[in-house]
Length: 105
Image (cartoon, rainbow, N blue to C red):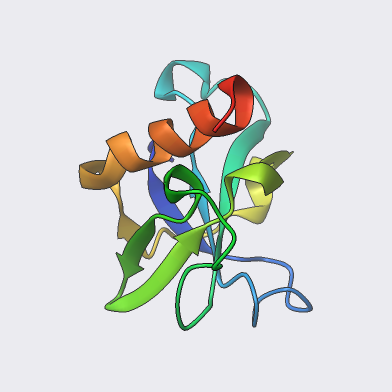
């Protein structure tokens, strides 16, 4: 389970709005049974009132998704099955969004 891998949201009830979860937790912490993840939201465009750092777009399988950094959480690693994409190339976007949540926009 690699950092910045995207997985289909295991919660079927939330999957329409939040289709993917991205693992942000460092690979050095793989021995823990949980993973710190950021949900990606399915919207036609970024929320109009979201600051730029929180309204970044990434693509998973060609589908544009927006980061929901303010909704990051830990969940059991066993819920994440097979990765559908690696977003390692977008690492800076994820870090920037997390920084905005922690340090301020």
